[in-house]
Length: 205
Image 1: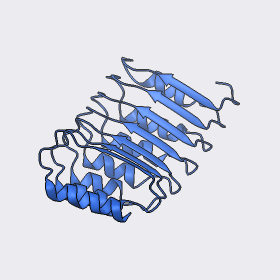
Image 2: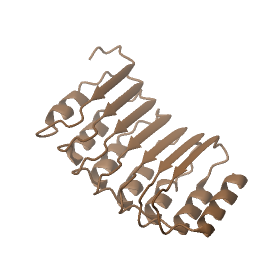
Image 3: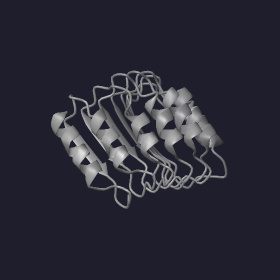
């Protein structure tokens, strides 16, 4: 890469048989990079090692990161946490899509939430079809007080998410929030109480 490049888009979906080539590319990212968009959908051989390598190589100048890693069967909470540990404090916009990654659970969201940059303004987390995600993960993801202006959560078919989880979201809404989007399609344990608490929390935020 040219060291003066400000934006990079990289598509590697379906790649194999291992993630060593991707790890090598991560090590070549320009030091002054500001926006990075990575598409690794259906990357069957992407593992926690690859995500950890990405976290270690993220430029300190980065302000926007988008990562699509849907249907990656070897990605777990350990890899997501290692990626999150490498997020630069300059980051303002973060979009992560781990939909249909069967090994993504509450621990993955907790590892991410514990390491979010302090000045993050826009956060999008998609974990549709991650059936092991529930109340504890959502609560941990949003526990850190951040100056968020935009929040999008896609938690479709999160079997362990119920009214308690929606109440956690309601209690975590920052006063700085201007945009909010939540999708919980197929979350059969959610009822009137959770929706009511969520609405009250948004109205009070």
